Image 1: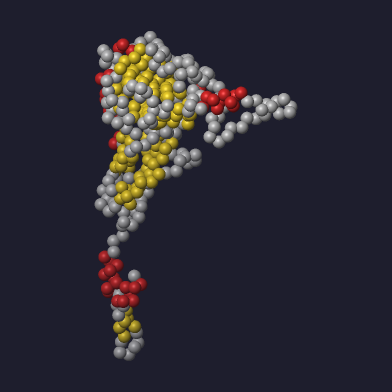
Image 2: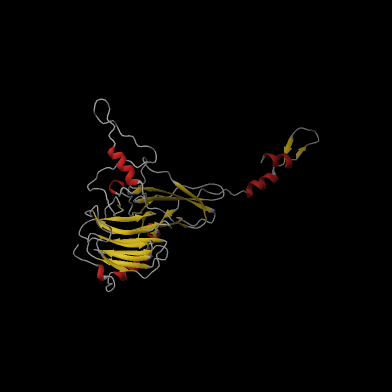
Length: 371
């Protein structure tokens, strides 16, 4: 108010100059018109109104009492694998979404690579931000897996959730295996792996796929529940298969040609075919091959379904009885595949699969309930 005082103060001096008076009447009126905004109260997140679906989370909150001075809200969230209140240590940083005008917000396109997410919100007026709400923890579980490089075919270049055909892979590996650089003492010297080359195989519980079984499996077994993932093929991919298999799938076996694997197969070599395969039986599919294929596995219900990931159109379903844990399985030749994991079962698929449970007829020729 210093500037206002300098402009408006009017000194009054008496004739005899015995005293000096200052008129504060105008400043008093200005001060009396000032309105100070109180600090907003902490909002309350309502877990019942929050929704977790289709890899999106909608968070809803309310003010404990009406406050028409609220200008906007700030929402903060972070992923965690711990239930309950946020932990002080070993947590990811809070992500911030500012300037939310309503009392709910939807986070979409999330990858659910953790079991839970923490949320908190605070209200802001033109002057100040209030306290955070009590944090709320929402469950965001989904199937996360990578490709198992330790048992993949040598002609496949595998990295996390991508696999690509590599015709020189086997030859390069044979050279590494056949080379024994022994020192003067007669003991083998440590092997060196150059940048970009395939590391030596780590022998797991099974041998590597070989021959014409250009296969790689996921590294996470499905033993119960409902799960969903998506697969996208490169445009120039000549042949690929997508499905599930038991761990006992032989190293020479191809997906769909044994009673321990189920898949759909796309062939773009010489002639274009799209088919479902199981136990060496083939069912031609009279549908267009989608850009992305969604795979739905209901282990307990014995249902394996394939969808157009964009339109959620059903492509084919196997109805069976899984007697062992299954692994996601992929075959690729002359091309590559990329996976999307950490996905919930889409709402559209949950709705459609209810009707699939009673489905018979065209799919029964490939089904075998005594696997």
